[in-house]
Amino acid sequence: GLGVGTGTVAMFNLLDAAVERLADLLEHTGAEVQKVSQAIFDRPKGAQFEALLKDLARTQSLTSMTRNSLVSLARLFSFASLAHEIAEDAECRTHLRSLQRDGQSLTEHAGFQSSQIAFLLDAALGLINIEQNGIIKFFSVAAVILMPPTLVASVYGMNFKHMPELDFPFGYPMALSMMLISAIIPILWFKRRGWF
Image (cartoon, rainbow, N blue to C red; front, side, top):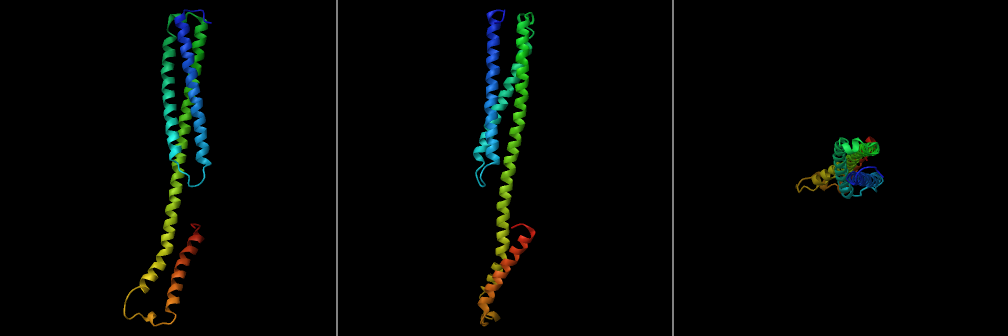
């Protein structure tokens, strides 16, 4: 053990426990981030994002609190290095430097993890956007395809007394053919442009 008073030993034990706990928390949130990452990019089409976004928000909150704790610990380490009980004991100084290095590396890791969470959040929102655009595109194409046949049906659904096609023996098949052709032309045009 350290060749110093029990107060200093107790303080180092507390600091060791705090750093170890924060490292465990970061490891746990790191595993959560990895799980959410796989769920975002390997999910079946049409699956909901709500649960994943909640998981990301919770993980970001935990990572942020861990980082704040590490910053507070770094200030505590700086303050402790000024105490004469530690400054005059080589073993204490070495232990404190080790804790400072651990705290620094954990702070950097928490920063990296925060940026990874931000990337995953952007990716999830981007995928939601792509899916919504696909749905809007589908309905837009469907509306354009159905518009010309609706126009033909509207014209021949008018109740005018004198419509030349009413007396034409092939008037009904002609109207149906016009509706079909007017629906097929936009479909072919969309296929040619790669929208369909």
